[in-house]
Image 1: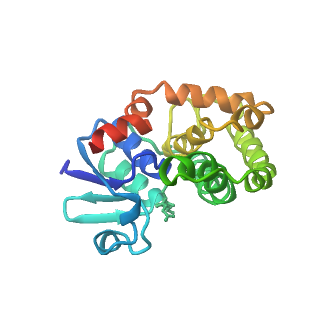
Image 2 (image 1 turned 90 degrees about the horizontal axis):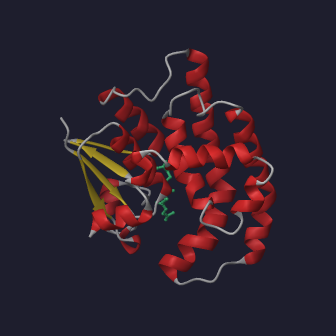
Image 3 (image 1 turned 30 degrees about the vertical axis):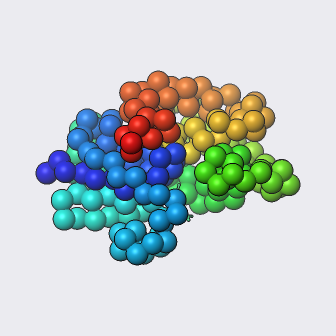
Length: 217
Ligand SMILES: N[C@@H](CCC(=O)N[C@@H](CS)C(=O)NCC(=O)O)C(=O)O
């Protein structure tokens, strides 16, 4: 079965992690845009009871939650493998994916990325500078920990990208669009270099906000 359908919003970093994984694996898929105003509508709530994106359909199998989707894709599309075989490396990958969800997005991405990018671009809002400033110490802490985990490796768990790399790159590329990026990466230049490596991958280039917007048109 290759009939993957991704329901998401162009620009969503969670959606991008799924799209980039499909691209990296060379899988055929269709992008179905969800209008931000339709997230709480009946049609989308039938796909995702919590009214979020992305949602993956694979034939008659429907799945939401990015970590579950990425691991599913890595099982049904095993090449190239994006999960290390070594149990400790696999555990590091899982750890990094959870850091992305719990510390990078919560309190950082959903504040700084929302205030700087999503609010102004999609809702015409003015950034709340106090909220951004309040989120910066936590963002510094998360960036520093990600850089520590990356160490001097090319990717988070070694010399090839893993699911964690696609998940975190989709989130970090959002920060890279904000004026906070230079201050956040100054103490950890390896993280900026890593994002540069990730963004050079065809899978990341095929899933920029603009490219996904074009898929939706
Ligand atoms: N834990 C969810 C998080 C997904 C998520 O927060 N997606 C954002 C878009 S990047 C969303 O749907 N936001 C809509 C909202 O919060 O109303 C996952 O892994 O799929």
